[in-house]
Image (cartoon, helix red, strand yellow):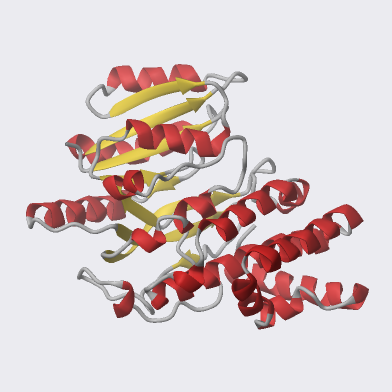
Length: 339
């Protein structure tokens, strides 16, 4: 069995996917790289995938499918995964060779000792085009280092500090047992990919390594603000999936429930801010409908989120209130370096 399966969802990615693949090849015999060609048609994505699979048959798999979107490509990668652990690396991102070696050493040492973890977390870097300072999302303030730990052992993550797809490696068997399945033709499903398994995570491990390099800079990226506003319906679709997924009030582990509340809050605030920044009455109504949906389906969760400072800010009345909310968002952008 391979130690780590890495899925690379690709859609017309020929211009940059090779940098991603090459950064993962040094894993050698311990990894399988699953390149999922998600119905590419504008470029040589399929050919490049096949060439790497032919050149590195013991490491690389090329899987071709009809276009189903990023989530379906992740589903396909997981379906083909045979490794003990599973990681998603987007085709325009790459990993640090030094940190990659440390990740594999850690997973190998755990396996040889007869131990396992459900989730391994590393730092990631916002590799923003043109930025002189690259913001690093790290977790050393909240997570113990050098040992397996539980939710009860961790400290509190501060505002804006979240476990994202870029930072997480999950145990493959756990993902399959919790029936992880992402919706087709929907953007922003990476949030659900991280959120859904959290109640099933019992053992965690943190490596204080800047492993994942998250590229930001292409105009056609889904996290580009203009595109996020245009795709607000898909952001809200994922937001509703997260609301429906789990009754956080019923979770026995209150530490994981607290973190999931925080995650759900920031997702709902992002949806709200995108609606506000659109200045579009239809999208502003989508924001109101989202909060009403939360109130109708999870009233206790609604009360808890609505009465937070961010929840109150998202509902400040009138144009002055919306302007204040936008200013807070702009400040957060400067601090955390997203978009």
